[in-house]
Length: 315
Length: 315
Image (cartoon, rainbow over all chains, first blue to last red; front, side, top):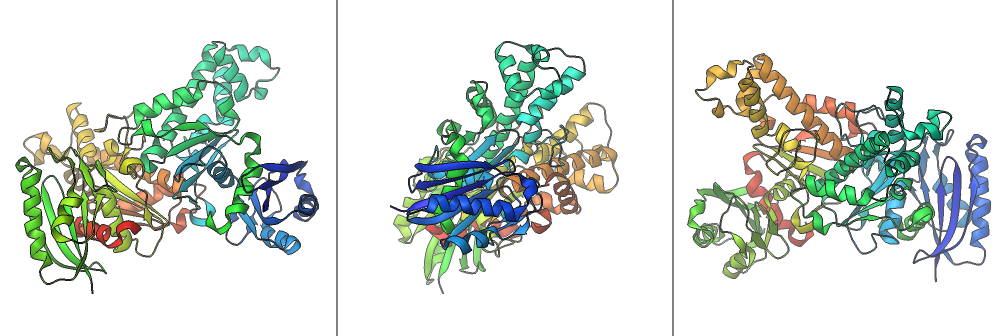
């Protein structure tokens, strides 16, 4: 049976794996990106490690997931903020030249969505939206079994819809984005701001410096009944519920899949989000649209890249 | 050359027309729905009038646009609020039994989107979102040349995304929907509320009863420099800009098409909406996504239905 290689390129680490067409990961490895080395040296390490996974295996294709902006059709990476110096690099050609198999490139959030769609929670539907809730909020939209790539591969930026028109400034430059309100970074920032303005919380006793407070601590404190933590956490889930409601209202997909570290904290996240969605969405039969936990866990990066390679031009 | 019949069924009037495959309307007629007559009598009048358009013509298919809820696959209309008594009526079968050609049914907003996509402003793109700005705000989403039907034909409810979480109650039951803020009805309501709370406006001198104030008057007064009218109109356009920004952020379509009566008032609507979109959307190249006026005008209902008939199962 044919095998597929998935390469997941991040600013901190790179993960490479070999899987069969059912998404069973047979072998994988990770190494630090060390971005300061620059594209050429990093590419060499990617190629060396990929060679190791290739040995005596019937490799059908290679899929690559990487932070955007990028040009998925041309197979070029276009100066992503987390990979300094990767300015218009032809990674697909560079890797294809070595291995002589089809190579495909996709935005990492879209690749993850495709992974959950093909191998994970969405494997039985044709229309789904994936959100990854982590330090940021990314995602991908699948309609009629295909990724919505959008203009210049910019589709699926579900974390940057405006939820509060006069809300906090987002990293993207807009105000009141879902990401500014409900991402791990957004939650921690809002919590710290209220501490600075004089509010109290048990979390203050857990850290030496409040800049070390993260979303997990806030979720833990909320579970312990801490008033401020509960307030900030509940607000974040409320806005997340509105963001998901908007997606459902516009697209009425068959399923919403939530992944990322935040879905592991506060075990009532799914219950609360569903309550808000039920309250907000009146013209779509939400009771028929499951909102579920992603299934690929920490392997979503590699398996997303594998799905990109497996589905190729049919994605 | 083959011809297509389009039937546009509304609660007030029904329009039927015959067009060629390029969307040239050759003949059309309109008659009042008179909903109190009930389904059977209205169906008879539809059939009689359709027979008139059929004579000696090579009719390939019939398309029907109608307010939802409906089941487009089964061809049944399911108790729409504006057609009392149309409870699970098999309109596709009833019309096919008479004319023996393929008959297709679609939600009216989706049909209009398909009309603009195939015959109008969107004829050169594969991905577009259509919004109709009128007494309400409806729309339709086209991805990869197909309508996003959604679960139970509920896709494309772009007017019911939440823009202001604590905003005014919407007709749908949610709070702060785009429709509650930026539709003709929403604008007039917000304007009246501020009059009642003591604000003044030239519009008060134009009507005997403030319940007769409509969005056109407010747009006209805004153009004349009326402070309150300008304030309410600008707010509506601001929220509309946010709604369109959200759609662009999530889907990154090739084009946004705006139709409906509101696009004819306030001639700076497109300019202002584009400004807001440019301010809000940071991760999608908005300068490459035209926001344009719909092209089918008053014929969008019939031509939307024609597009439904023409594209049939390929829509």
